[in-house]
Image (cartoon, rainbow, N blue to C red; front, side, top):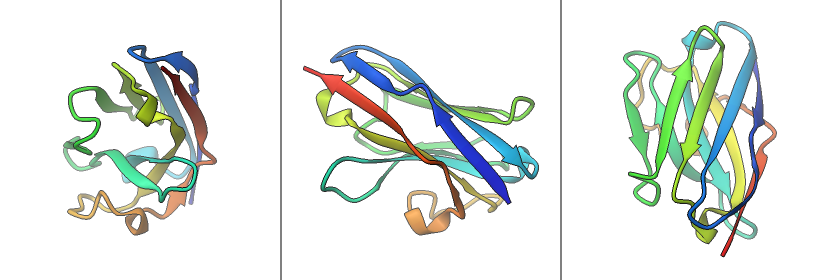
Length: 126
């Protein structure tokens, strides 16, 4: 089992940047592929980005490609989401999640992930 704690959310103006962090506690962090999801009020939780534990391959939703970057530091047991050129439509609660799969073609599915953090609010003002 692994516990996940997100941080780094906040209020930022459109065009600004934020870096989210997700610290893992418990089992070996490197044993998990990691994902970031977000959920806006009244909407379903949606995929943002993922990184495989096998080779560090990264994947992004079309809506954030070129603006967001996911990375991981296994020594620090932390996954990051660097968010640049933020837009008001990026406003949501952002969640990190852990998937024990070595690699997975279903990295974009909520059901693929076994463990979730509590979320951190990101608000982008226009």
